[in-house]
Image (tube, rainbow, N blue to C red; front, side, top):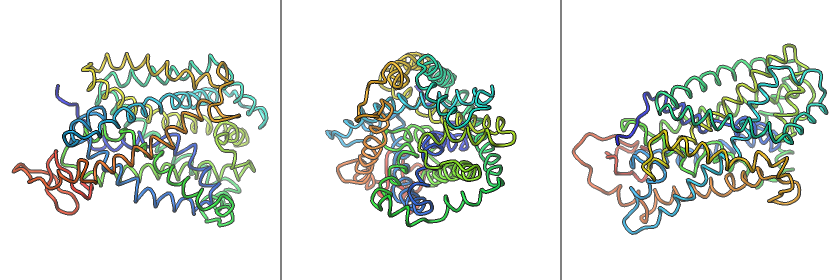
Length: 443
């Protein structure tokens, strides 16, 4: 069966960026940056993005393009005979499922809040009332399962339409709309009275906050954020490498994706932090910043219902773009492993992901007694911990070792004599075929 290809370079960039851009950019980045020293954290984060994030993303793209397979078959195609690198395959595929087991629920929250904002359900509520509304949302098992189910079903139905007609077409519209919405929201926040104090808090270095948190803790937080925001280590980017033409420089494409991802993360802070300072609300509210603090801010704004609806529409697009990209990775792996067509893979995985997502969706109601990481923790906390702290950084390390050591793919294949056919070149000038890999990994 001929492998599907994306219709355009823009489609590749927006799909890859859509996978990277998500809740980690908008939900986690602003409050983590604020808590960890503002500009100091951002500079450390950018350092890890450049020295770790972009090279690892380039390697994932390169592995996918060379193998022309999903993560399910990449190692089997590229690894030296008799080696055991393919053992990582199961962890990579499991990481995609595990990520969706909680991400679909959080994406459902974004969709529900968009609906609630449109219907004016937060109007007239104070901070305590909005907090109680969020707690009621979590405790409502039917609502949690319904919105999670909408995300799962809609995601797989779009993927069922095909790579170009479904995934690429929808993601282009969502990502362009997302960038427009962000720009409008950021401009509105920056012109609020009192926004300057928020800008100073967010973008100026604060050594007192940095030392209070602890240098090592800030460094680890920045490194984990760099891996989480780019969805590295579970093959989520490798699949898009298999869909791109061989005449593209993958380092350049990785930089484009990283720049777009970072732009969204930083602009998200420009939307949220100045607005919080303008209305004297706590910017250190953690995850509650999005679901409790910001609705209170929108209530205080002129035309707050409109701004709130636009914000949560943007949040829904950010979350759903990641859902679509990871669903495609799961589908491609199943099609490669079992020989299924796209429709069958979509229907089977629609049911599977829905069932697997139920524990997280019910984690505050029927399964509220579960505390996997100790008192006060939830199933979402446990699943997020496994993905963010183990599978993403651990998988990234395995990709690097596979690509850059003599025991893996890159060392021996980089020394192969190139074929006569015209092939792309890396930045150092090496001529490469689809089955070769330069030690620099920058092709």
